[in-house]
Image (cartoon, rainbow, N blue to C red):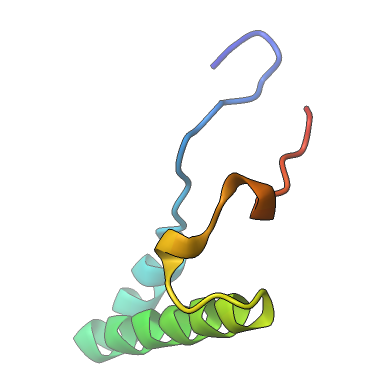
Amino acid sequence: MGSTGFVSARCVFAGRPFNFALAAGGKEGVDTAISLLQDEIGRTMAHIGIAHPYEISNGRIRKRSV
């Protein structure tokens, strides 16, 4: 971590929900969490008018300056 307290990343993935799903529901809980994530990604892609993740271009990504 740099002196600013921020970490730069090329990819971010949230593992905590899957850990909670595993603790609460075992394999079935993780399967449900994965299904929910897939549905959310599918809806988001539909909202921006794309069918596949490879269609995401730099123009569709909003970058925040820190």
